[in-house]
Image 1 (cartoon, rainbow, N blue to C red):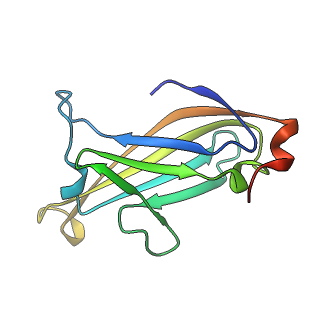
Image 2 (cartoon, rainbow, N blue to C red):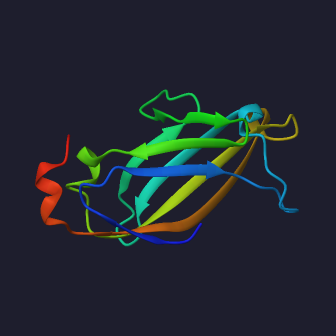
Length: 126
């Protein structure tokens, strides 16, 4: 995923797809859970949180296909967000009896967008 420039007041869609070490698509639908955090790269502040289940303060991801899910960061959130680079922090939770609580956690972090200011943000919804 390449880092893109976004503006305050944008609705920012994120298409979530995972692959294994061989490049094969992972069936997200069969995972025990998938947690997505969008965090400010400099401050570490959490902008939004998503998960498959959408419980416990997380917004539910939308399934597009079994290997592709979508999250949308709404303009009401982005219009007042801190300017700068944002990263996606993903925790893939798989059922595996060999791990604590029978869950194997795999975490990955990568840069996803750089948020710039916008004059027109004042007329964004939210």
